[in-house]
Image (cartoon, rainbow, N blue to C red):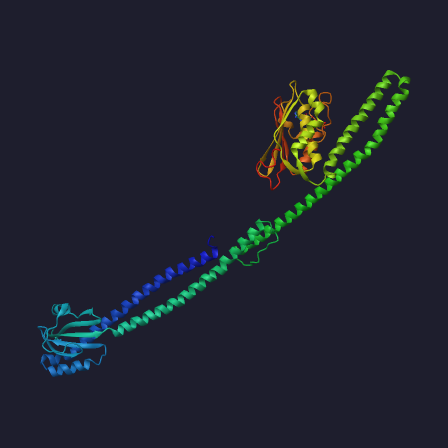
Length: 484
Ligand SMILES: Nc1ncnc2c1ncn2[C@@H]1O[C@H](COP(=O)(O)OP(=O)(O)OP(=O)(O)O)[C@@H](O)[C@H]1O
Ligand SMILES: [Mg+2]
């Protein structure tokens, strides 16, 4: 899983505090230690100079007892472990303290060598002790001997330890403050961002009632408010859309109902007109002249056409109002049945109709029958001089079955590709091709009722291919339900 914003912000803040603070602390430790030892060195050299001053007279007169007394007094300073006084050759003439107590030994080591050539006090830290050495000089500057003082480092080491403890304490406090700051930053910034991200995701997924409770005066507050407004606006828009869709559905239902009732009720008076004009022709035909008989024929013909139109209109309105529940419908069987119905037209036109294995879909069988009948019927009807060749195919595309009915007929100008699906829209006169112009409108309504789309691809003179989709059932795999 990816690391969350909160964790990353805490880690980042903590690292930042640790790096910067750690650097400063380290530097302070370095400086502090240096200071402690530098001060100790300075003080050491000062007390060595003071001791040299105090033994000057006694040494000058070579009063070694006096020197010893002075040295004993100097050892009141508890840091001093040992003092040696030497003559100009470096041979010890007086000494006090721990370590080698033989008189007449010679001071050795780099410090002893250096002290004779140097004009000031020298110091060296060695084996856990601190040594200072330098000349014992008369006021005129002439040397009469040398002094070596050895200090214990306990005191500066203790001070350095104290410093380290102090720094450790500061570090702990500092880490605690750092942690608190990181947590604070996280609570102040990361948590609201995480909350907003969560809410935005929910809103994106359609839970439009989600709101963010963050109220603050900075940009995060503005962001939270904007997300809330966005959700509220979408909620409002969605509600309006749902209302409009419901309204549309209702008015559509009303319209269908109206078309159904109107066409149903129109049939009755129309039947009367047809019946009585036919009666008129039969009873009084021989009493009327040629023209009158012709007019009666026109009237009968008009009434019959109107009856056909009303019949189709009824069909059309029934697609929506009289629809039954969907059930598995075997398209293979439906097409076979269609071809039986269309047998006279097929025979008359010498048409060849071929079809691939077709799937079983969820739908209303009688409507699918009507659909194939209209499409194949058109494919046969709108032929040119050659016998019609019609191919019905189907393949699965995404979540849909894509059906196609291809013919080799007169074709359609693409600019009429939309218009032909509108009720009563025809591209030909009745004398050219019979029909009322309702077939494709019914097809469109049926396909849409089944959750699909219908369209045509064609060029004049090159045949036409009508496509329509039907949603595949969830358990339909590629190719299953094909073939029998
Ligand atoms: N396969 C086709 N090839 C060429 N033109 C077609 C084809 N199918 C439909 N058309 C054109 O589309 C118009 C509308 O077709 P539609 O099926 O809706 O009505 P119709 O066939 O004229 O009448 P009905 O189907 O109601 O008897 C037709 O008049 C025709 O011009
Ligand atoms: Mg038709």
